[in-house]
View 1 (tube, rainbow over the protein chains, first blue to last red):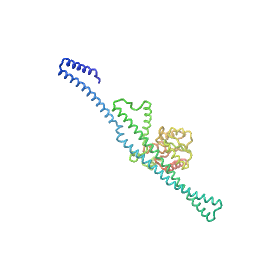
View 2 (cartoon, one colour):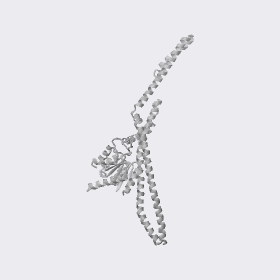
View 3 (cartoon, rainbow over the protein chains, first blue to last red):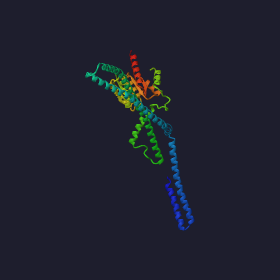
View 4 (cartoon, rainbow over the protein chains, first blue to last red):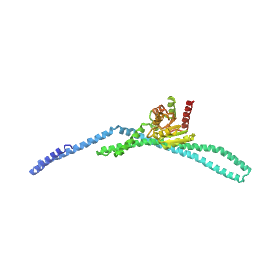
Length: 258
Length: 127
């Protein structure tokens, strides 16, 4: 209300006129002046309301035309959903691979353990000279079998352990994907704060104190650098310019003389 | 054979170190990004470098370039193990002088193949 004092003068003038007409006893004229006074008040109110509406409209428009917001809403949020679903798939697969390997390896270990216990018992019997010749022959054959089979059993256990080891690579892949989603979520959070700020018409601090802002800036910078890299590919969201397998990488490198 | 493994994820460092041990390379050390790795390489007498690409601080590609720019390190064999699979990136790594490139997720067999291939090439170049 830039013309505050002007309006006040006009109001004051009408009010004086109203009192004057009342004192003169001219009720009809007084009513007329009161009507003018009310109209004046209403127009002030409408002006203010109009200004607020316009501000709000502009704020909403500014928000809508923010490309970053648009791409977040239309592409990146659904993208993030796919990525997080892929994280579930990856962790699920890793857990199953690990459990399968454990379930395969455990019975092998148990059987080795049992055979060793049996052999140990028989060996003790032999050492205390309580074993007959035919029994010793049987023990000798069992030991021969054990030596050849335990080798294969241990190889199988070792391969299961390697499988468990490799299954842990999900942590690196999913970690990279989740980091990207966290970056997106904090961007959305910032935009929402901005929306609240615009909507309330209050000058809320945009994002924390100055030192916090600096920290955020640093984090944003490194997040941005990371976002420029393609990162792990998510099925269904592959970028066009990527290779699909190690074989493709090998082909590409050999075409470059590797 | 002394090998440096560089990756920002400790799980991946452990996986690679375990696989290397399985292949008979027991003398391995690790670092979590390029800026930690470079001084280790400069003072550490390493024979082989395995590095990720996407790391905070100094990335793998910058580490590779720094290694090639350092006279005492320029012939160090470098194997990249990364989730980055953009064509331009693979070409960039090749141009920067990488000796091998493995995309994650990878298998133990792939790691062995690539390491063998790198040493074969080095041997044939010496001969």
